[in-house]
Picture (cartoon, rainbow, N blue to C red):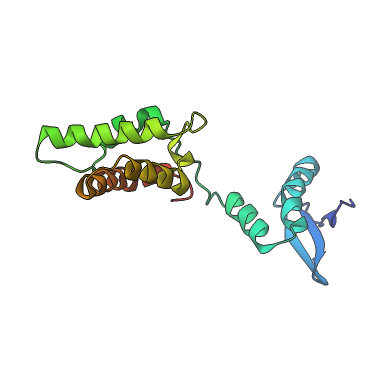
Amino acid sequence: MKQEVGTIYQKPSGTYYYRYQINGERKAISLKTKNQEEAKRKVKELLPVLKATSIEVVSAHVAHARNLVKPANVLPLTEVWNTYSRHPNRATPATVNERLNYEADLRDFLASLPESCQYLHEVTPGLADAYAQKLRERQLAVDTHNRKIKRLRKIFSTLIEYCPDGS
């Protein structure tokens, strides 16, 4: 059966195979089925990889096919503090006041974010830079400014698993 790219054929054993040409070389792969409809479905899954124009596209398809791509672990910004406060790698300040400062600094940062930013993975370095600039404009002591940044860095580095790209 002629396909958009390549051909599906059945061997005497009954198993369907898919034959195609890539870079002038003929390739054949087993579809590991004896059912014609299932063979067509499997070929449709392979077509994006065969038609891909770059290595990045091919590797993304292969990673998806091998289940290497994990689904995004999405965390709403409204749940950031609750998740952080229960995380085993969180900071454990010596005083209650310091813990409250962590929470207040996070709340202040989240309030500075635009309305369109709803999830932790949507927070970008650009948004963090804008917040740091706002802190500079408040004319805080350098120590206070650095403490606030350090607390936020600890919170975000602890919750890095909720960012699909790891940044």
